[in-house]
Structure formats: C-alpha cells, structure tokens
Image 1 (cartoon, rainbow, N blue to C red):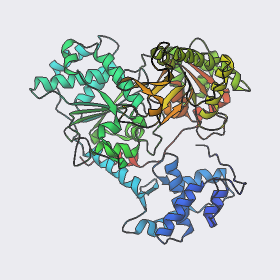
Image 2: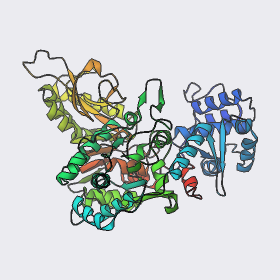
Image 3: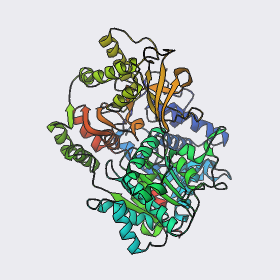
Image 4: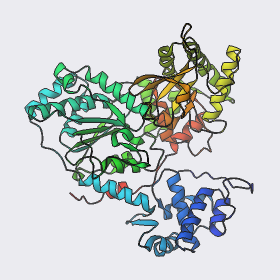
Length: 601
C-alpha cells in the first residue's frame, strides 16, 4: 500500500507529542506516528520500566497498526515498505529491532504487554489483548465439530427442488449442500448473488430435518452487526420465506433478526463483554450472522465463545467489502485461509441477480483490480452509472442531491412520515471522510444551506422537518439501534401537538418518538461509506477524496458502488478511480496464518 505521511511542522499541532524524545519524537515529527501512538508507548514502557528506544518504537507501531484496523504489525515489513517512502528516517535494522523487542520485558514478563508470533515468513508483534483474542478465535473455530452427517440424498434432492426455483440457482443449491454437512459454514458473495435466498432455503431445510427426526422446533438466531443491517436481514428473510411452501413458512414463523449486541446480551457495565459467554452459551440450534465483514476480531471472539458446540454456525458476507471499523478482518482471513481439513465449509456465490451488466460489471472490474476497465465503464455512462470529473464538485453534487433532500423535507413538513422514509431510501450521498472538504460534515452543511436557499427559510436549528437521521448507538429501551435511519417529521395539520417527531425505520418496525428522547443521532444528508455498509439505496452518489487520502482504497470504492440498486454516480477524476482500485486496504493479522497451519481436529 502507498505510504502517505505529512511532516508535522507546527509545534502546536495536536498530532505532535511534545513530551516525547529520541526515536519516538523523530517518527512523530515526521508524521509517521500520531501523538496517541507515542503517548501509549511511553506509558506502557514507563509501567514496565522499559528504557530501550527500539522497544518503545515497536510499541508505538503496534498501537498505530491497531488504530488502522490491523491486529498486529510485522516490523520487518514496516521498515521495508516505509523506508522507500521515508529514507531519511533512522529506521532500525529489522533483525536488530526484532531482537531488542523479543528480549524486552514488554514480551518476557509474566504478564506481557506485547506478544510475538514467529513463522518462516513473518514476525508478528501484538498487543497482548489482540494476541489472546486471535488465539481464541482460531482455537474456537478449529475446535468446532468438523461436520454433520450427510443428509439422505433422495430427501435432499426433493427438498432442494422445493425451496429453490427450478433454474438459475445452481450456486445456491451447491451452497446449501455444503452448509448441511458442516457445523460451521462461511457463505460469501457480493450484493445480489442470492445469499439471503440461500439462507432462507437452508433454514427451511434445517427445520425440516429437525421435524423429520422428531426433535423440538429448531431454535434459530439471525443477527447482524448494526440495527440497519439487522432490519434489512429481517426484511430480506421474510421476503424469501414468503416464497416457500406453507409447511416451510410455518416452521420459520416468528424468526427475528437482531443486532449481535442484542443476541449476545449487552451489559450496562461493559461494552466488550456480554451475558452469553463460554459458561452461559446461546440456546440456539442455528446461528446466522449476516454482514460478517463488519464483525471485528473482538466481537467474533465473543460470538464464538457463546455458540454451543452442537449448534450450526453460518457466517454470511462479502469479503471484498470494507472490514470492521475496529481491528480485524476475520471474514477475509477465513475465506483466504480455510482448508477442508479445518472442518469449516466455504460456499461462494458469484453470479449477481440484482445488478444489470453495468453496475455488476463495474463491481467485478473493481474487485479484480482492473482500473482501466472500471474507468471505461464509468466514462461510457448510460442509465446506470456516470463519472463526473469537475474542478469543483459542489455544483454537480447540488444538482444530484438537493432536489431529493427538498422532496424529503416537503414530505416531512406535510407530516407524511412513511413517504419521507421511502424517499430517504431512494438516494444516498457517500463520502470517505467525516471531516474536511470531502467529508460528511462539510456536505451535510452544504445540503442544509442549499435547502435554506431553495425554501427561502434558512435552517437555524439542529432539529428541523426533513432532517435525515442516523442512529449512532444502541438504545434498548427505545428499541433503536446503531445504524437505524429516520427522518424528523412535523405532525400534520389538525394534530393535537405539532412538535417535531423522529420517525425511525427500526429493525422492529417504524417508531414515532419525541426528538428529545433520541439523543445519539447524526444528520444524514451525507453518510460515510463505512457506515453505509448493510444498507442500500436506489441511487448512490460517491464523492471520492483526493489522491493523497489514506482511505482511498479498492475496498472502499467497491463498498460504495455496491450500495446502489439501480444507479451510481462517481464524483471524481479517472485518476482518483485508478488510485482507489490500485490501492488495497490490507490489514495485518495472524489469523490467516494460524488457520492455514496444521489442523487440531
């Protein structure tokens, strides 16, 4: 990956750790390390009486890695990759650096701060917490039963004919066969490849198996990382189940999707531990987790320790999407490293049934890293995509999103919450950043200014009719969850009270709440691409950041364009598109290495 750093020249720059000295100060002033990396390194070294500057520098790089989404760092790779970009810095010799760290009390203490995972190719350095979590995830995955008894072929052939359409679903049938013979299955595929169709059919088959065996009704859990993803999973599964025969529909009646936090049982005293754990397992016979690419290493560790050994676990997701905001890339690691002997089944769906040749072709070009093909498709345009290469994107973005925002506002002012929420799903403005001229905060302010100009009534308050809302934290009392969306609505004429209300499209249905009760929300005229995962819109407008942005990666671009159902508009230059596709968001982990090793079965 391209290394992008900026020398910190302003002595008052908040990214500068003014108390640091030696190597930490040198690398901090060069913009390689952030102040937070340096502060954590200095504190941990002070607590362990470690005074070796090489050890302190290693800690800072581990902290930087976690901040960037990795769970560990390969010191040799850091030196090799970044030395080419910053040759004037005093980079330690990788062997000397590794030797110093390995001999440090940070590693050798009875309760170590750092852990080392050595192999023939890499020397990975971890903070102790992430080393333990990765070790646990690996042990729990390979320690699960290798599989289940193969179902009767005569029954299976007839059952597959019943739950899948006659033609065009060979990939889904094959995936169901894999999942029925495994205790743990990873079901992968891009948008529109039929993942939910496969899940619904598979649940019907599992429920019928239990019924034929005379077992109690199957206990099924459906979960997703965010409230919005859980809501979409619920709607999609209900839609697919409605197509099944009456007996299958009856067996799957009442199955509800919830957030992972709710499934595991959130606790008020901690954000990283739950009511369900190794000594209090989940009661479910089948656990399905959607949008697994968004699940961090820590959350995967909590999930795996909570699932009973006899339960069937199905992890569903798209490994090409952005990984979790937190550290880890568990789904990608599983797909890349799992072997048959590990007992984990991999079922890949490839053919998209949602996109036409246009958006589907663009997504495929991005996924395989063909920048020229992707640019050619965008420049060719058509009804389903466009590339707007303009010096100032403001005018282009205004023409694309302001009329839509105005339509939402008109519906909300008229008190038509249902129509306002429907309009909200038609178009989405996506950005890579939160701050800066290409960020969400900037574009939210721009859209509100345009609304004021179009209506003649400037927006002066945080709450106003037509304000699109994104819930940013779970509130179990209200029944709203991180990722839920909504809109502020004024009750219609004739209502007893005309105070603004928040209409939230939650995972359990639409909620009508007083705005004073909805505390942790953000304005959503624009949305970060990371937070858009698990949602879709008819048309997506993607504002690409400049070339020097660290966030401009293939995974980010792929995630953005695949949020669109019918049309995607990319605001940026061909060079921006090429830079995004050619730059990978590679995360350092050791899980892939552990999984690829000898099985413990």
